[in-house]
Length: 185
Ligand code: SF4
Image (cartoon, rainbow, N blue to C red):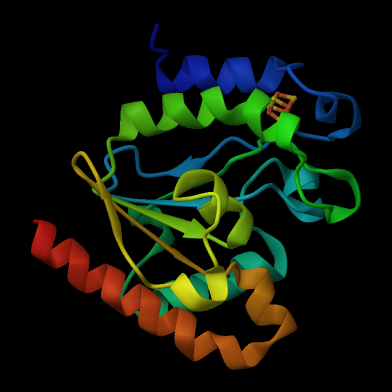
């Protein structure tokens, strides 16, 4: 069974598949261009996303926008989502059962979007999407190919907020993503 974008959003809004449904303020469905070539996937909404129901707002969102702009990309031309659609209290790592409970929603989003490139933002997303032993420090910027999709990972913007020296590395990863998109066109 496959849902439309509206149906996915309605199901996520009403979802009680894991205990985060009891602690979330608002579920956070992915946002962006439904025709986008590039899909960004992070691990879970943060506190401000939980308040507003929108992915990547607040400081991480501002940093992501600056980074994208520095590489000639704009948020409105991408699709941005999380593995979990609800905020884990205290920003803790998502638990395995929460990730599995929520994964069908991400699959429905990916099936509809059919992205040419998937970019995992951070270790948790890379280990769930690319490979369980993915090492973000050593393997960010590397590529894996599945069917018609190229997958890569880079640091989550919150990692740059903690350590601004990572900005250049992430910028280089995104510049390579732009080059990859041009080659795939
Ligand atoms: S995190 Fe996902 S599975 Fe859990 S309640 Fe929210 S939408 Fe449902």
